[in-house]
Length: 317
Image (cartoon, rainbow, N blue to C red; front, side, top):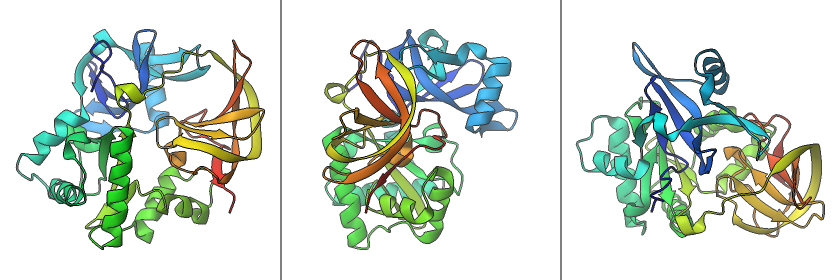
């Protein structure tokens, strides 16, 4: 499932000798480094999760060699050279160790129940992994369950299983409280009503016994479409267009092909807008225009910064 030469995939965690754990965010090498974002730091009390601003400040002050400016994408993110990685946390390796072991807490008990339900609805658990806090055994009572599904077909089968299980009352759609928490973390430029309407129909999240779970897709090697182009930012744009191809809507980044002559490709690096729109729907998009230095072709990026301020994808209803 993994490339032997570069075995790093989105949803993995990589750990360095300084006591830093980064979440991998890219399928491809960046100057022989792994594209990622700092998520946890080691303290005297154990691992501590930090936000984007804290991560950037810490790296600027103490570990600037992990700050990376991509000339290819004209963007800043974090990157770790492979030789600095002391532990590679792989979701598909850690899930069986939880599944086959004793239930150490309530969250692990719910994970066991969730896997059994998914199997009941036809999901092959061999295509699943676990990421987020559970990948490094740092879950709390209030943590979510973050499942990884490897392969596009497997992912959509799992989404259908979640939808059916919710319809049968075996799993629950997010209640107002869980959706409001999700909104506060993710909403960006959308109103709560807009955000929840888009979220409820994706079937990439639901709840089990009051705990939210997500399913996130990671492509198999033959599904990965590496981007070799060189881009330059060209300012902001907002426009309305129809989606003509949505087969990569749940990828990372999510990609939508639209019928706009100027920018036919909408790319989202923000999880909020993964699976946001379907083929045939008309969307309003606001983001940063990037131009391919070689061909002059333009695309629009939603999530040109991690916060994606002023950037969105919304279905015109």
